[in-house]
Length: 232
Image 1 (tube, one colour):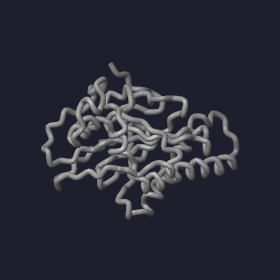
Image 2: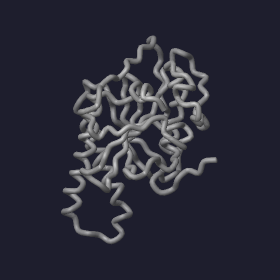
Image 3: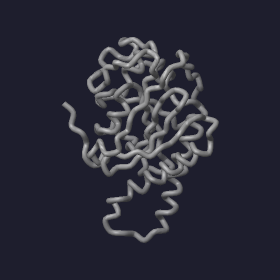
């Protein structure tokens, strides 16, 4: 889990400058609007979902308003759980923005995050990283042993994490999961993104077909935030 990997696949300073403030804006808007609503019984059933919807809306609006960054935001579904996927079209990097308590190191496994992490190892090998650089103890189970041609551009999945319960006080983390979801390939604190360097390495590769994940909205029946996927 070397720093070279995190630098190679990190969000650019321009992307962080767009997405991270949008996360805080969504949290602020939710706090403001929710405080004006009548207190309801059993509102814990939808409170976190509503908060995530505010964050996703804020991020989508920011991405749509800045086409010069060549990103897009789309809505996807896993069972009854809806979420937003941001794609860096230049680098074929998919970004999920998910709630994770700051005190919690890792997500419980889920099917939709497994999908977006499934090509992470192959993408790193395709970009020239060795097994030693990625990590000798990395578990490659759950990855897709690719049969794709070299001209195809494998996707990589990132996750941007925030703790919605903390609101404006949350820290923001950015990372890539192992396909097994048993650990991170890398995870970095990007809360103070303005102070971080912007030494993002440019991926130079021949022009070829860009491989995209095919999202089947009905493929997953797991409600991600409630029922974790049990892994062997």
